[in-house]
Image 1 (tube, helix red, strand yellow):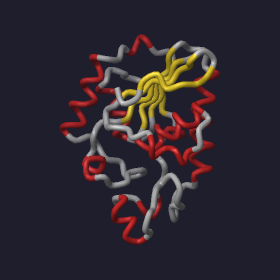
Image 2 (cartoon, helix red, strand yellow):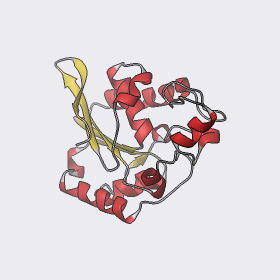
Image 3 (cartoon, rainbow, N blue to C red):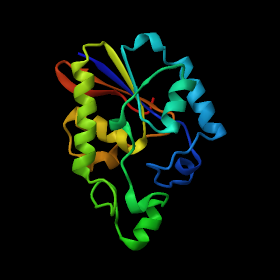
Image 4 (spheres, one colour):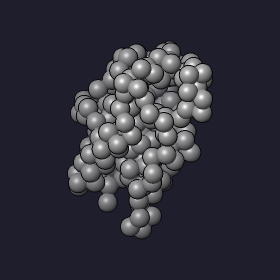
Length: 186
């Protein structure tokens, strides 16, 4: 059974400010470069039989700085498309839609929960069918949480219970035959 490592990209200006960033292709801040570079101390590229990354610069650059020179770009690892909420903070959105949460509310002009679940379930299936001992995915905060919830078979509305820091490593695996979180925000 494959163990799946999830790595959230290093800090960007918008992740620092809390702005929703999907298609806006930001680079890492200086701190984000440091976070990504420190991953070299914990991750050995030779340990992974499958290395995937989101197409976004921040994820690809994190992979590169972590020592993964040629990850395969997988469009399904892109961040949840925020549509009209791109660049806005949750507080700004809540001024228009009180109580808004990405996990439970619609996103005008953006992806639906079902679309995001379908996309990231394809990644889960790909990893589980790969036959490798370890796989690693460089992705984003919301997309990585959806991927983890798909791995576990948990309703995506529970995503709010799994905060994910920039530059964090999470490990999904199994407890006996049951999908499990082995490490979170390591």
